[in-house]
Length: 256
Image 1 (cartoon, helix red, strand yellow):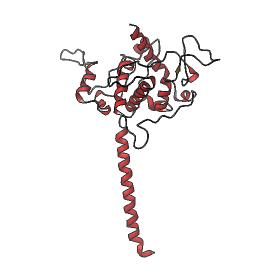
Image 2 (cartoon, one colour):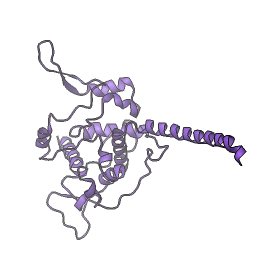
Image 3 (spheres, helix red, strand yellow):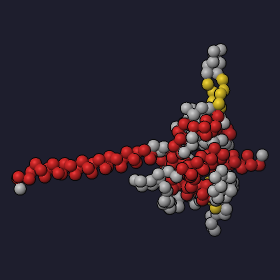
Image 4 (cartoon, one colour):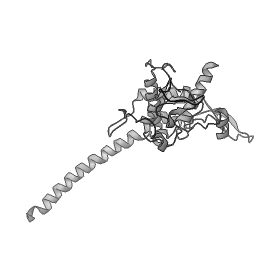
């Protein structure tokens, strides 16, 4: 029971924390630019980090946060096979129908279904989270100024005690990257908060980096394909430019 309460509080913390506006997010401490594997022209997602991040989402975030734009079949992008995806989807139920009797019914989710919503509607979500509406995480790293760096900084920005001279309001926690530095819920992640299936050490930094990587993938699952296409186009343009230059030299050689 205590574990459930801690998990609920942690999830709500994420809802309130990363729900800040992009403008206000800039008022926090200066963001440290991290060397994410998916940065740059040739950057790709670390499949191990993606799968660990998915585990965190499933065990910690999914009870409150939705991923409305992601379908279970998209999990092939993080390295899961068909059987793993079927198993992951089947852990949730979706409403379907009507059947031959005209009635709606519940069935296990299928790979073609989008991630099951944690609540039936926004009012139910607010009622379960003390009035706060947990944001959808589908585009979170694109919706916040600083992107992945901001999400990571916020998740690791909690302090056990506020700096000297800073007085926190009752029930608030100090976070160096949250606007105003006061956040209504306790830190959502901590060392050993989950047990990774692959045995990776679960430090706060590792957990935060992995779930941030998963959120970055959820926001841009086509990122790697887009980069590959961009490289192909760039190479084509280089070759095409060389050919055009050669043709130009051939056509105008008698004019010089």
